Length: 88
Image 1 (cartoon, rainbow, N blue to C red):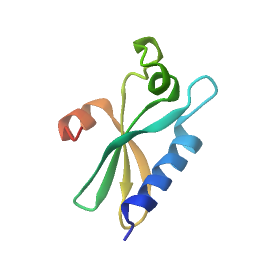
Image 2: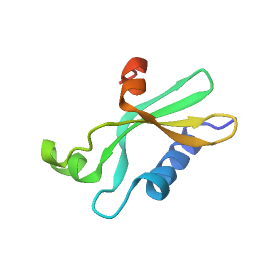
Image 3: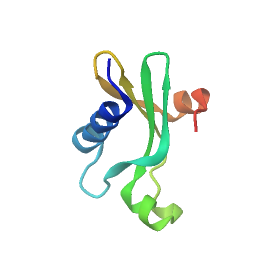
Image 4: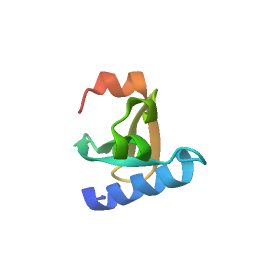
C-alpha cells in the first residue's frame, strides 16, 4: 500500500505526463490532499494561477487527481465528481 509521499509523487508525475500541455502546466495545490477508503485525492490547478492568483490563469472544469493506494493507478476526476466528494 502506498503512503502519502509516494502517492503525491505519482500524482504530480501523472499531471506532468497526462494533463499538462504546452500553454498550461498543472501542479498539486499545497496542503490540499486527503486519503479516503483506499484512495488518495489531490487538488490541482494551473501553475500560472498558483503563482499569480489571477482568475484569468485558472484552469476551469478540472477535478481532483485520484491515486489508488493499492495499485498506484492515477486518474483525473471531473469537476462535478470532485464537488460531490467535497474534500477541500
